[in-house]
Length: 237
Image 1: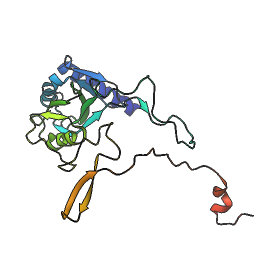
Image 2: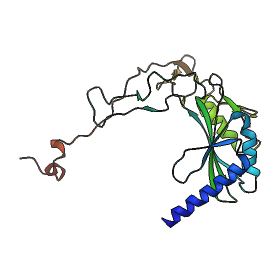
Image 3: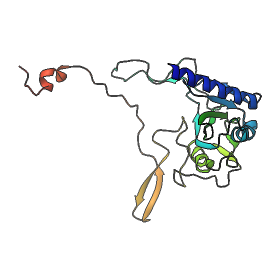
Image 4: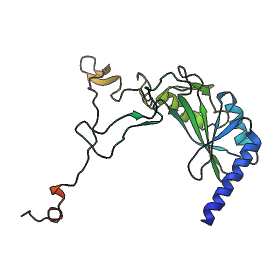
């Protein structure tokens, strides 16, 4: 318990240093246990990142990870029951009324996981994309060179544009891929499929032929098949 208290005090000390440097540019957001997370506006992103890297009390020299986020279905629960029926679990029940709004402001965000080698501290920074129709934020390559492939991945999977990136193109999907597969409204079966065309002697794209279906989770119930006698290899009487 004493160790946990010391870690908590150390975390709050770090939060005080962040607030001293960036009080008007960042907002602390809720996070798990001994984690420290902040949010900033897109217009202030580069200034905030530069301060986090260069301020002597902070020195977050390393960008450990960068990821896109789609909040389209945020707050939507897939599974509301503990048992299954013939129609599967109850699905997609939202606390608030109405379907998700695909064009709502702030749907897309970028999250940066930072590490201070000097102080052995970690911090999470999040920025929302102001425009949902064309989500974009500034590239942080000039702050952390290692952001190059991370930003390409977020562009590929979420369609988030990073202004100032020197080589922003797909990195995981094929050149002819349609859409961005990590968006919440991207169809599970995709938009196209590939098939070898013997006449053209090459792989070609065709409209997807898979029929979408709702997956019903498999539930293992206790019945006669799980009797101890059967598990021990004995025949039932």
